[in-house]
Image (cartoon, rainbow over all chains, first blue to last red; front, side, top):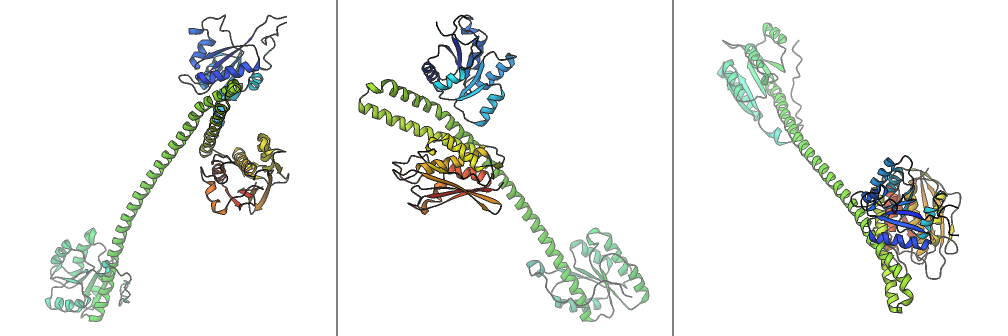
Length: 145
Length: 406
């Protein structure tokens, strides 16, 4: 049996309230997840490249899923999607948009930039479950014996 | 044969009555014999114009330097410089190239030959001794011609001024239009930003209220719990308002293209998204043979979502909403009808309800944002259509949207 490994989610979100609601919805899923929060696009890049406050590579591992808010100060979600697409030949995680905008052009732009999904705030526990479902087996956490 | 310049008495029709035609014109008489000058002057005095006399060609040319003439009467037989020579010098000046000249000549073939060969401008001749009626008639033609020429010139000037004014007004309208468009863009951007940025704190408000109720509800006193529920209701309503404002501003901003759309498919989609429209909450009849329309699927969906939602919402207490969708061909257009068994709307309010923030009905029991029908009206308009309602209190409502057929 494979070593037990919990799921890692990176939430890129500038609003502490929205981050709080996300964590609460996540708790309700009952999933065993390590959640890390980055405050904007640049912070997320620090995480993904283990720089700055995220330089501990053993703790800040490559996430399985990244939820990205679109409207953020400094580097916004669209720019982060662009960076991810330029950085990886094949994105090694699920990159999902999590936004309050139901504008069709925002949705299209995010998907065009490589978003694997688009969620409207507030996200529900069921939506989080659906978002992480079917993560490749080698990365899915094995249930405790 | 005499030259073919139009002669004969002027028919007396004053073509244009205006100050220009009432003003006097100048007539120049050129003759070396003072007696003839006097005789001709007295005949022409009856015309009431300014008569200027010159005793020879040189004097005549000097007169021409000072003023314009409607006609020049030129004696052919003058010593020193005769009439033809004088005429030639007059014609040299571009300004007088077209000034009509009438030659006065004795019946003399040599003169007539020279006259024929004379090809410049409007020229006529009179035989001496002059018959007063003929002299008057011929001069009158040219007087009238000069007046009309002056009139046309003034009209042209007026027209140019008018055109100038029109161009200026057009420019002003264009400028105003640009300003208006700019203001519209700003307003749209403003409403978009407001709706968007307002929703973030609202989401927090709603989130924490929910959490409070969920985690601490059981521990709260009944009154505290009621206050919290009131707070939540207000937040939900405000969220609905901002959401509707956002969809309204989106309809205004959105680029749309029309395509053939199945009305029944759109109705089914809308129904599937809203449990209030499904049994047992609502009885809905959507015949499968509805006519297709030329529409934007999303906009038509928004229209029908709002109309159906209203139809299900505004019913008397205890009544199950019954909604019937029909289509009616009207020439090359199609009218989509949404008929309900609701409380109905007083005809006095029919115009008003399609405006933004207008709401009719029982405010205590029926909660709406007042934007729904404004969205319907605006979306119908953007799709090149119109909408309306037939209803009276207690008899249900029949809302319609009319679009091009597909």
